[in-house]
Length: 567
Image (cartoon, rainbow, N blue to C red; front, side, top):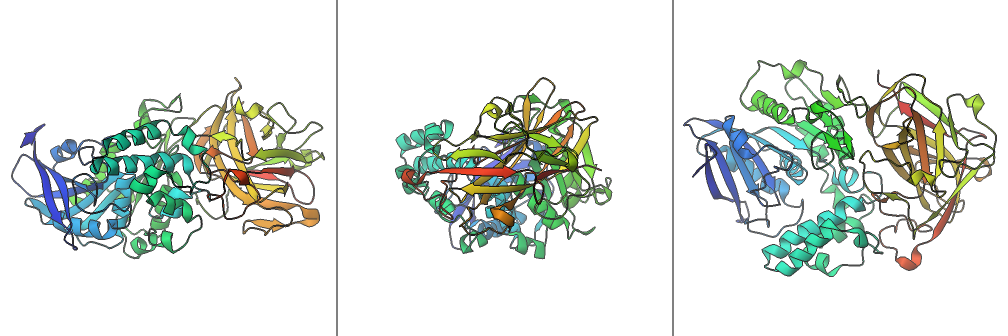
């Protein structure tokens, strides 16, 4: 059939190595010839085809590609049982080989798509199908534990509980259980009550029946063999494929996107190089507005054309634009609303921040609780005041809120006394940042282990406190085991290190840097129940406790914040 001036073949079968048949729709140019193939494998019904962020397959077909949109195993109309991520490598390999042999195919295959549709690319690439020449994974990691589910060392509850009900919905609908499917849709839209259920592994009957994989995710809170089979980075690095990585500063999977690019780019060659684009986008949508902030007309970054240029280069041999000579990183400044190019991405997970701007935490005669308190950020160590340590109380029954990474105004939350707030003076000149902030805090805690959460904001002259970055780590009581990112100090004081989420933002002159310290960022991270180590996801309501944390700004070693300066 013809639709929108391209030829469409519906429900085309593709048989996997174990005999299971998967089905795809194929979009082709309405002209005789040979064309490279763009393949997308996705679990949401192939008619959707990632169009919440990507151009419709008709657009790619009109540009001279055969476009294949396939339902993965056990989804849509494809046969088999859906086990997220488990069979995507083998099924991806088989599908790439099949797509390369389609009538009219040139034998060159690329893969594209975002989120799960990006994960299927990494999985297929890990087995190195010969016909796969380039990929364009967006907003997804090749290491699911560190980049997707536990990017900050705590289960990303706010992202993954609604997603679990979305996947359960499609399984229920496939089984003909339309009443349950409708109930799942309600939980997806309004998951608030579900976030507060404890323990997380107390099985909800819908998830237990239609998506039990959720309980595997939360049951493996530490990196182990379960997650090892879903970490494709080592296999991909051994025989890489050129990849165009697309991420969003407000996307929940940013850490994984950057980690994967950083790893692959370290071994790039002129014959196999990679590119990274990071825009001012949440997971959905990719536009000019995010978190109530309008980022300007240029905010979309021409990502459709960027993908087309990428595939034209690798699949059609169009070398009129020498991509190998271009700087590999293109990113959007979240505050100046300008695009920049860079030779490299400042390291996401390790390494020195250099150069950097240092702010020292300082107490005063007034406690630092809330924005009206006495907490300060000083540019000079000699200006740090000797003061009584600041103390906050974290009640895990009433965790402090942070719903997303969007650039929300936190000024109202910062009035709460359960938060320590440290504010700098007005910046004398603009401060361009690019990279991951780091925080070093002297602390003691009672009632731990517990979480220490750091939230970085920029305060405008109007008083609005815009979210820039967040990070967390687990800290211990004096009698508890010291974690790997802590150092013992004298008199019971320890130093906790928190590497915050990367950012790109030019802080305006006259604005104020502000740091929050508290015990939770709920439901963005699963709340720590306090007093229990290694059982964060399995502690019931009776185990939700109170922890008290003291922060010292002076003494043997200072507490300080390092901001990565763009050069």
